[in-house]
Amino acid sequence: MATGNIKKLVLEKGFGFISRKDGPDIFFHHSSVADRQFENLSEGQEVEYTVDEGQGSKGPRAASVNPR
Image 1 (cartoon, one colour):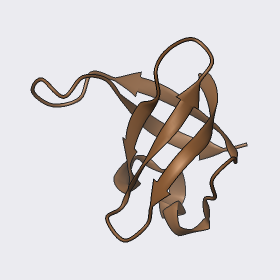
Image 2 (cartoon, rainbow, N blue to C red):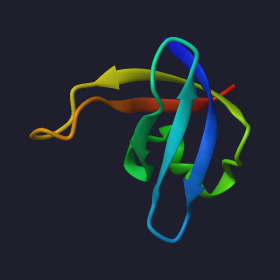
Image 3 (cartoon, rainbow, N blue to C red):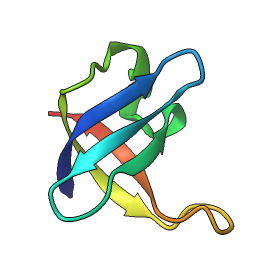
Image 4 (cartoon, rainbow, N blue to C red):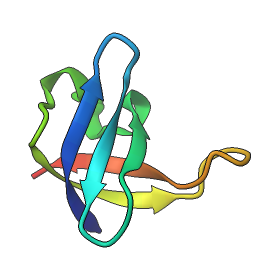
């Protein structure tokens, strides 16, 4: 699993971005957070995740996001 830090959270819309060491920031949707704990995440928090190719031409996105 890859690791990174939450760069930005948009709680009211249910998504955020993870800052990665090895590439550009990556998008994640609240449905990809393990145990549905999206509301308990905070900016700067370290997380583990896998990379999914996403839908259409939107590019990669984080999946299986777990707080560390």
